[in-house]
Image (cartoon, rainbow, N blue to C red):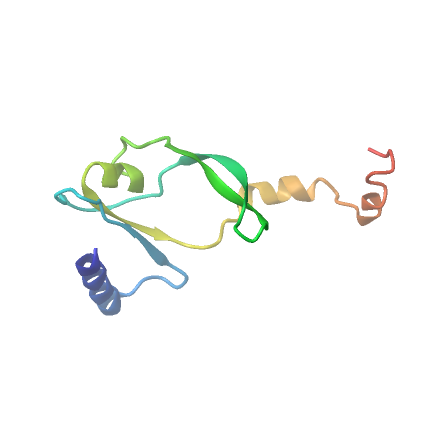
Length: 124
């Protein structure tokens, strides 16, 4: 994995990426690597469970556990599928998670701060 990071860092320095772009790189563990795949992010469903625990000093904390289900793990055009098939996945990502198509839908809710005061007072 370190050699892959070094190789990609050199390419990044030479060729660059659009502003705001990061690379999500996943290297398969314990397998002979077949090559690189430029991928999209796979779809994962998390089934989280929170276990209440107490540390040695008596303080309560919560341990997140659970299961992850890869919904498209056999699709090698995704990062999860490519890694499962023995490829290094390289996925260009960005931080803007805004669902632009839903902006107008939520704007149409006509959000009203005065209605917040009524919450919990038997008002809908």
